[in-house]
Amino acid sequence: MFLFTLVLGVLLLQKADTLDCYECTPDPYGTCKEGQTTCEPVFKQCAALKQVTFAESISPIEVKARGCGTPADCVEGSVNYGVSRAVVKSTCCSTNLCNSYPVISSNPPPNGRKCYTCVGENCGKTLQCLENENYCIKSVASSSGQTATLKGCASESVCLDLKTSLIKRLTNDTVTKNTGIKHYCCKGDFCNSASSASPALLLFLMPVFFMSYFS
Image 1: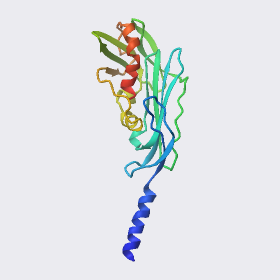
Image 2: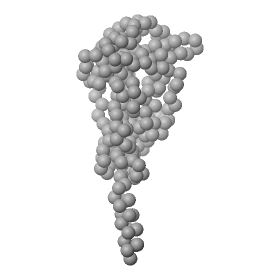
Image 3: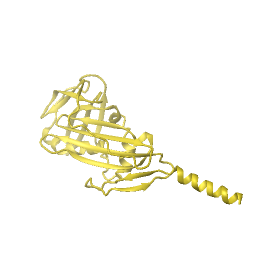
Image 4: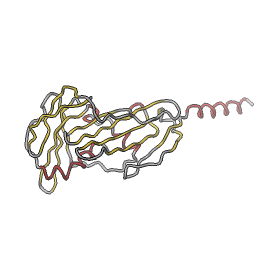
C-alpha cells in the first residue's frame, strides 16, 4: 500500500510540473496552424515570438511562432538599415496557455543614437536609431565577384546573437542561415564608417541579409 501511494504521488507530481502552452510552428511560407502542446520537463515556460520586417513601399511582413521555452529564450532586438528594418520580439511566462503574442510598434521612437546608412552608393548618410538599437552595424556580403555593404543600427541582442535558439526551435529552422555574410557591430555614433556600395547587388541581397539574422 505504501509503494502504491508513493508511485501515485510521483505520477501526480510529474503531472503538476508539466506546462501546457499554445503552439504554432510556421511553415516555410510563415503561416502555421494554432494548437496546444504539453511541454517536456526541461521547458519551464511558455514562449511566443513575433518577427516583423518593415520596408519602404510594401506592407509589413509578419511571422509568428509559439511553444515551450526557457527564460534564456526571452529576448528582443532589431536590425535597421534605413530602407528596411527587421524586428524580433519574444515573451515568456510560466502558467498554462499564457503565451500571447507580443506587440511590435510600427512607429517606435528614436533613441538619440546615430549611425551611417547606405542610400544608393552613398553610405555616408545619417540614420536615427530606434528603441533599443544602441549599436551601429555593418553587414558585408559577396556575390559573383561583387561586394555589397549595408549599414545601420542594431540592438545588443542582435549583435550578440542571443535570439538564435528560440527562433530556430520555434520555427523548426525552416530557413538556412547564410554563413557567407559577415556582420560587424560597434558602439558609438557613426562608428560603422562611411564607404560606397553597389546598389544593384544590395537590392538582390537585401532579403538574404535579414534571413542571416532572423533564421
